Length: 413
Image (cartoon, rainbow, N blue to C red; front, side):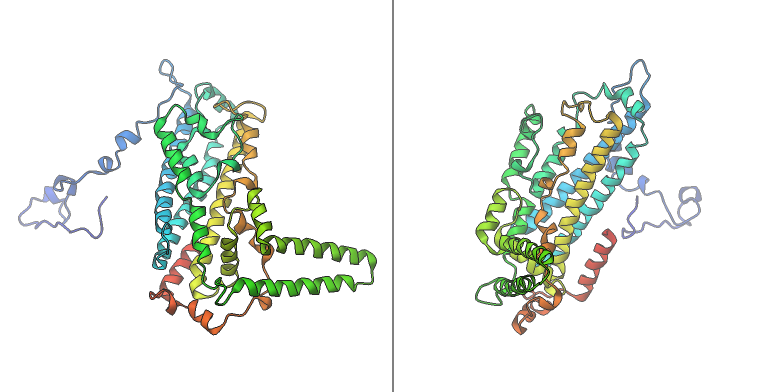
């Protein structure tokens, strides 16, 4: 494993035996460099010898137990990388004012998390090469081990922003209970719950969206006025309809639409939905997300909009991973047997597929409040200048950087 940018060590064939250089100008760097070899650097002696097959009785093992262990070890290694990148992103966002020049770095890390999650979703199909009978041959050896005991996956959930009250209770108990025997695990879980999650940090960032200020462009007030006018036009159309049946339908549609918009324009209404767990974002953060969505074509909002899309990708992929896991469990043990860790197995896993497990559910619902392009409040000249590259807090983002970011997102999609 050589570095193409490392210094080249060439040997003069006139002063070095041919059998030493194989008649070329190349040498075996392992014989001359004091660094670690491939296996040493990756500590393969530990990695490749960490598959302990419990079905090994009198020298005979259940063949597919090896696959089962490898798959789950690979999951845990990728979970570790996700946490590593997620912590970096949280560190960048955990400032009173973001350094917007680091947004490209943020998006790069988030795109990597998306790519890893796509890999994990697809990895489930390898386990499906094992039949239910194959699994039953060694399932008895797994108890009480369970995927529910994956500390790293719980840390990922917490660091993203999943709250305890959003979780389905595990055997009528708090999820932390399964880690009660491990003080270090409990310490990590407690820290992950107390530290600002990515969801919290994203909300703080959205609340600072330029254009929300009441004494400036005041996007929210303009958006509210335009929406109110459109709703009045919808009501007038319904009331003037001569067909009584169709008029009742139009009035019903108007009432539903008005209630939807009331839920974002009335802050108390919004807060009640947050208390009920139907929304996650603060009122101001929701405003910022809507504004970025409307003006995503403006240079300064290119990266924020792509980031919001990436957050939805992460939520979607974790949901897909949960779904594939549910289908795998049902395929292997059916829907009635208990899981190896004592849970209700299939039924518990199926309950985790609901929207309550989507950390960024508000972003998925933004399309409810989108207006046609011709009704979006027009930007003032001052606001257009603020959202241009040249006014990027004194540090412009080049067209090259933007195009690189867009290409990376296209690849991830």
